[in-house]
Length: 179
Image (cartoon, rainbow, N blue to C red; front, side, top):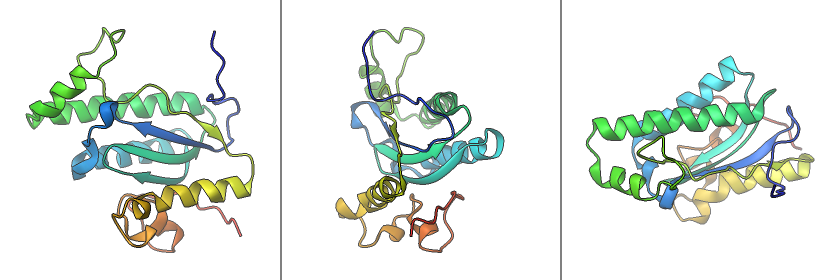
């Protein structure tokens, strides 16, 4: 068995994670596909004691910091549900080009499905202290700025940066005082 440092070993501990679309396809350029992610995060918060501390959603991946009593299971639920909902949406809207690519990038051992949305794994990194939490949240929130999409982190709609700037965000997050 391969050893990896990318495992959720302790529940209730925050983890920094990344979810990437296969082939780095631009799936999150549509409001509807982003809303599926936000709705799923909200459902986990309301039903699975899922704490979301920060997030950013870009066109082909997302980063987030979260914790949960059953964290691995919550992430599995998130990825499974969002994949099914997004693929169903793409089928309904006849987005054949993207669906063809999701089929092309599907790993060979995934014989139960026609498409694959998420790359395998989320590479969870345990947040060990307040400095690391601050660094990860800064990284998350500055991602759209670094890419040149916005001038200030709180201007990116699909991020918790506005929550941390004292403004209303698209969904609630568990804001930490890191001062």
